Length: 91
Image (cartoon, rainbow, N blue to C red):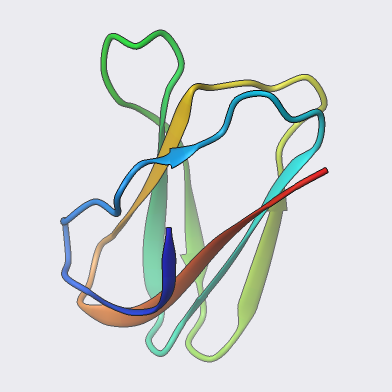
């Protein structure tokens, strides 16, 4: 999704494929304290908020999705301009 990217507040990342993996997690980091909203497309009928995660400046936050959770696509939206990384891990 984002890798040390210049992010504009309210502009979503490109969608990232999320289907077909058993275990999924995401790590988030930013140069500023931000709230990053993860939106998912579960039914190909639009985007839905999955969770908003507070990311403290200079820290890395990891979220593990519940076992069996599935969506077709995921994207991220920051509430502030920042430089951020939102990185999916699949197993």
